Image (cartoon, rainbow, N blue to C red; front, side, top):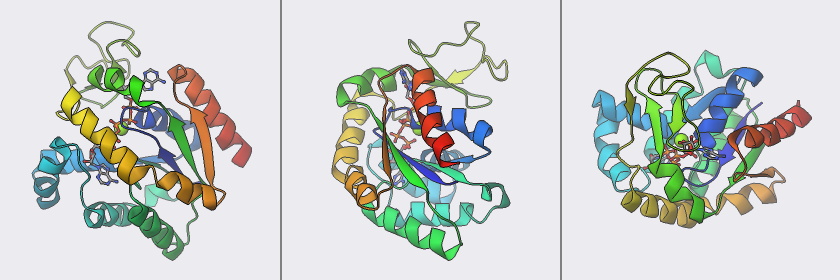
Length: 217
Ligand code: AP5
Ligand code: MG
């Protein structure tokens, strides 16, 4: 099974992809995580992407399409992928359709996690992750069970993304509405679009997503 998670920055794509991947044997493919890894490694792609990401704009289609094309050839994605943050433009969606066809794979559906803009600043500015294993948390909505200690690996160091600030969030939301929202009619026309209310608690959003995935098995 291969599916796309759509939704605004801070909408819960990464949180939900991590919760679904083990249960369904799927691999989370987050272009945001891959680009942040490239920035941290100081690679050519990372050097090109850093300023664009810090400004809350989209990295070029060419770069992200090449990253996904290469990643899809690795054996761990054979059972399926959860695309998280890709595609983000109609050109990326068309490229994904073409590369899936070339590789003998099929995209089953795209699910929009619907969250109004009014929720987003609080979601983004409260987000932090474990510096060791990447598990995600939130100052108010998703605290570790033991304060200051990661539930998954016991790590005690946490980090916040440089683009998780009020100024950049506004720009990321603008980019979402202008460049990514057109993917909703794109997938709807193919009969592939499903909707989930992303304002519910994290566990309830997961249940709604599992309902869609279970029905498709
Ligand atoms: P990316 O990393 O993809 O960022 P994004 O789309 O802005 O999405 P986020 O990761 O911020 O949000 P999310 O939906 O994953 O939310 P999360 O689950 O963490 O991209 C970063 C940048 O890279 C882009 O701006 C762009 O420059 C570049 N880029 C990446 N892909 C690209 C592409 N394809 N093309 C071009 N450029 C690209 O949740 C957020 C917080 O809320 C967490 O703290 C979580 O605990 C909490 N939370 C989650 N769900 C709930 C809930 N239901 N209730 C309460 N709290 C919740
Ligand atoms: Mg994310």
